[in-house]
Image 1 (cartoon, rainbow, N blue to C red):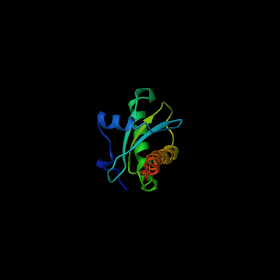
Image 2 (image 1 turned 30 degrees about the horizontal axis):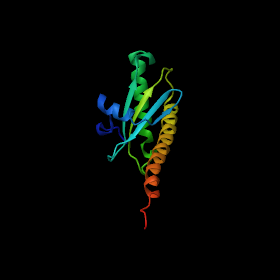
Image 3 (image 1 turned 120 degrees about the horizontal axis):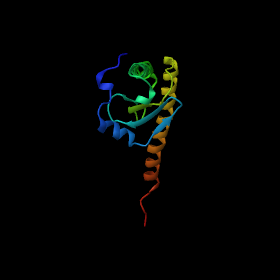
Image 4 (image 1 turned 90 degrees about the vertical axis):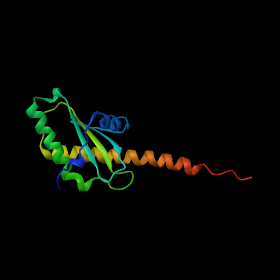
Length: 135
């Protein structure tokens, strides 16, 4: 599988929408925000600040995170409310091997998917419980 252009999130507005979704999974090296996108495929954006390191270090970490996403695509949830827009926010740390990033990302996605399923079920069950009044 490749990392195609339509799988990338770009622009401040798109990032803000995902961040405003208020679903986040925190880990020691990354925090992942997610929001269902209503599209056909998952999309990803990476936010990495200067405090993480020099440009070469930041670029290396971004490459590793994109590769972790690419290798994990087939494991990502496909049932409702997927697919998602993901934003990975990188915390200051020394670069790690690819498998660490892949494990951190997939764990975060599992947590976020269950969070969104609970949110959707809560909305659905509240509507289902309201039965019409019979006279």
